[in-house]
Amino acid sequence: MGIEAISRGSGKVSFIEKDFKTHQILESNLKLLESNCYDLINQDSLKYLEKEKLLPFDFVFLDPPFNQQLIPLILSLISEQNLIDSKSKIYIETEFEIDLELLNSNIKYNCKIEKQKKSGNVNYCLISLG
Image (cartoon, rainbow, N blue to C red):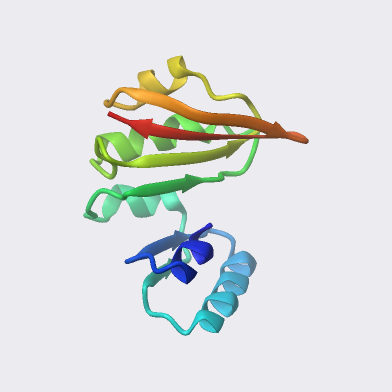
């Protein structure tokens, strides 16, 4: 989704990828775009987001490893660190269906599930904040 955003003229995209091989593939694909509108970080996203002072993101794409219970932790972190605001949107891919109770217990903004579907064993959900 980040590469698509860049190709459509996004101002800035930050990719945070822990796995080195996946990071290398991303790096190779990003070079093909001939753009400097991105940051590519090879680090654990939780550690990176905890220590960096960043402005709120307009759009957050979350696709953490499944079956590690990371979604609540990540949502709490981006909310507490003010990495999202009332205008942000969050897209999540996970192994379980997202519900408002999970969102509202981890995010300090009112959450609205805009769209939610399942494809195979992947649930995906688009959330707006207000």
